[in-house]
Length: 143
Image (tube, rainbow, N blue to C red; front, side, top):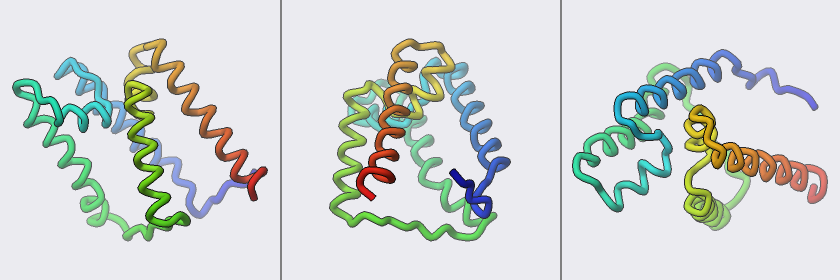
């Protein structure tokens, strides 16, 4: 295994991870809610009283983040080796898996594990195992 040191960003990754952890901790301390992206988005379908402002603010922040990035860094040129139909299928499968798993990887991995949730531990282990298996199959079996 080799590391692509041209794109290796340990400090930026550390800062991003700390910011996500602080945001998740602040969210649960101030709102008593777990900060999972899928829960925030799906909660827009069935709103509870007082939920709309903070959900809109969080989603606006997620949408604004790439634009803020452009103020400080070069634009990133995304590469999608798959076509549009495959990307749509992948997105639908992620959404389906999120509903079946009662949350997304960020919700279980960041928020669930920090609360010592057994369900989140099992979910995170399943996500990681599926990721490892997928990379192995794509790199060593198919290619």
